[in-house]
Image (cartoon, rainbow, N blue to C red; front, side, top):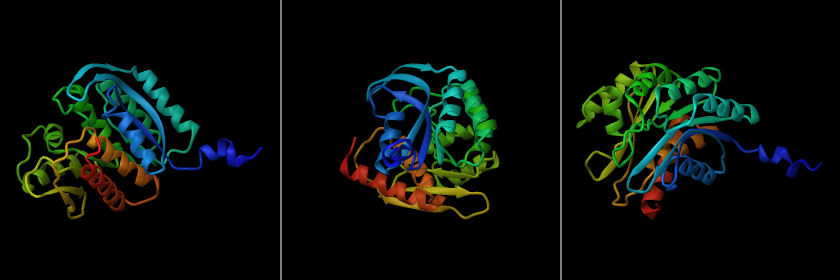
Length: 259
């Protein structure tokens, strides 16, 4: 058999396991994740956590997947092919968070990027209060990088939205104290000519990633950024290089108004 055209060819490129919800509009969730990974030539395995009915303006329905099936999807993906990174998005409930944490506990060598999807851009709550608490207790220590925006950072730390660099640093430090080794706080909700994302890591000074603030409005930006970072981690880049490459990708999407 010609292995260049057989199963080995399908498994030759790095693969990221995406654990997230579906979005019927295609504007966010797994559709965005898979498209982003494909842009970088990285394969995708998927484990769907919830099915949602969405337009670009609102979330109309959310149906979580059973934890048994989430566990089965993740373990099957991990058994099928080598997984070079894991990206986590929407989780919906505490039980889903726990199921994901259990699988991650059995696969601690794989880098994990967590995009904390706690609410939709239209304001619909996408993670329950018990789910938030379980995330803090069980998932943060199993995560390599978390990528909250400022509203998500405030929700995760049970504080008001940070309005200054000092407040942002304090809230990021709170997440580091909970066991997350690295937090990339996205600065899109701040004012100024530049949108500055800041990486906080235990024992290291903050690292800033700046880009011009453009007027384009995109959905699924959190999905795209976190998936782009996961793609570059899967390709063997270190954390800073992966974030830099992901930011360049996002700048291109905003400049093109690519929604």
